[in-house]
Image (cartoon, rainbow, N blue to C red; front, side, top):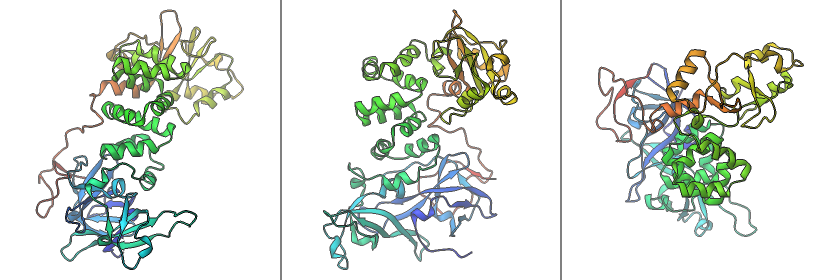
Length: 449
C-alpha cells in the first residue's frame, strides 16, 4: 500500500498506529504542531496517540515511516509512555487550531478579504529534509446577510493571518470541529482529552457540551479541574450541571468548595436535587456514608422480575450499580422504609418475568453502615465477591449503596487521574531514535507488545 506525503490532519484521526512488525500501538487522536512567531509554516512535531489503555502519548514525527490510508507506520515499536504534555509554542491541530477565526489575504480570492473565515482543517506535507510542515489551510467563510455560506476553500498557509499562540488564547473560538472527535467516546476518555488542552480551550469545549454529557465528563476530571470548569460555566449553568451529576459525585465536588460557596449552590438548586447532597455531605468522605450513592436501584417486594430488569437496563447505570437490586418497604426513595434484602442480577435472569422479586430475596448478605471505614468496605467487597453493597442505618433503613468504582476513587491518591504508574524501562533505555526529539514526549521508553 502506497504512502502519502500530503494529508489533511482530520483524515489522520482514528488511524491505527503500527510498529515495524505490524503490531498495533494505538490510534491517532491529534497532531502536535509548533506555531512559529515568524509566520513560517508550522512544523509538525508529532502525533497524539491514544493507547489501548486510553492514555494519550506523544509520538515524534521522526518515528513515522509512512502514512497510509488505513494506518500510520512507525520505524520502532519502542515509544515513550509519558503522558502528552504541550510546551510553550506547541498546539494541538484539532483540539486548538480548528475552528479558529482567521483572515485570508489571497489575490485569487478577493471575496474572502473581509469575510469571517473559520479554519476547518490543516494540510500537512513532508519536505525533502523528512520534516513535516503545515502547508495548507482548509477554510470556510460564514454567511453575509442573506447570502449562503461559502463552500470550503483550500489556501496556502502564507495566505492566512491570525493563527498565533496569542490568538489561540483569545475568547470566542468555535468548537464544532473539536466536538466531532468526542462523538461516541466514553466520558472518561473525553475528560482525558480535555485535560491535555489549555484551560481556555477546555472551558470552551466543556461549555458547549449538553448538560447530561458535561455532567458525566465532569465526574471524570480531577477535583482541581472540576472546580475550574464549574467556575467558568457561570452560576446558573453550574447549578444545572450539579443537578445532572450523580448525587455522590456532586457531593464530592461541593465538598471541595469553601462552605459558603457550596451552600450558595445548594440554595439555588431544586430542593429535590439538593436534599440528597445535603445528607451525603453530613458524612465524612472516607466513610461508607460519604462514598455511597443515594440513588441505587430500589423496589418493593411486589415488583415483578420484568419490572426489576427494566430498571437494571437503564443505560445511565454503571455495571456495578446494576449488579444489585435492593428491596424495601415503602417509601422507596432514600432513606427508605425497612430494608428487606437484595436480589442479584444473575438471580433475576434465572426467574420467569412474571414472578415477584420478594420470592428470591437474599436476606443473608451482610450490610454496610454509614460510619464504616474504607478498609471495612474493601474487606466487605473482597469477602463477599461483590461490586456493590447496601448501606443501612441503625433503624434498618436503606440509605444508599457503595459501588466498587466509588470506593476506588477514595482509595487511590487524590491526583490518580493526573499521574501514571512507574513505567517499565526497556534495556536499551531510549529505544530507537535519530537525534534529539521534541520535549512533548520524553521520559522512559517501553516496547509495546
